[in-house]
Length: 246
Image (cartoon, rainbow, N blue to C red; front, side, top):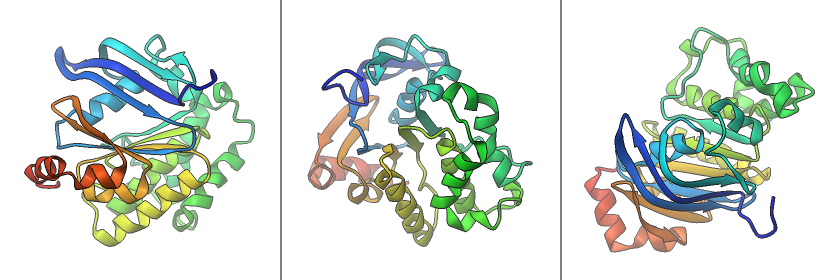
């Protein structure tokens, strides 16, 4: 990584889904070991931004750099090899497989290219965070609760020992008690030195978890800065209230 460069740098990003432009001039940075929130109404462009980082959306213009390396030139399977884990909004789990098999799948497919030498050690590091899953490692994912499935999806994103994990709506649709448990897990991930970029539609879920907060609306950055200050701004409150805080 070049001196002074952030871990992740998104600059002037214009991206599209099925031919329709979704993001406009998005600028966002994530520093080493930091936590960054990315909030906005449903359909505001959060998922498209994240999918652009992972090489899964059409990039019209702009730059996405990780440790100074341009990602837009890479194929999607090359991006996790660089050290970025991704938990998609729709989880994308192998529901007919066990928790343990879901954790091991990224290692089976990309572990050698990521330099994972000890598969068991890498998986145990995930269970060390999500201890409540350790006793259920042979349970089929299709039999899990919504909260447990979210944990598996986040855990799988950690299997390749990333330097940055991108979480798309990890708290959406969960009961308040489960939200607090998951927030604790996410904070522990960050405490271990892994940078976190987290998207949510509910601005109230995020400020106490992150170092910087971005608000996106209609594909453009609406506000960004100190999480407490940004989340309390009247314009942000009105915008998010209009979303129904889904």
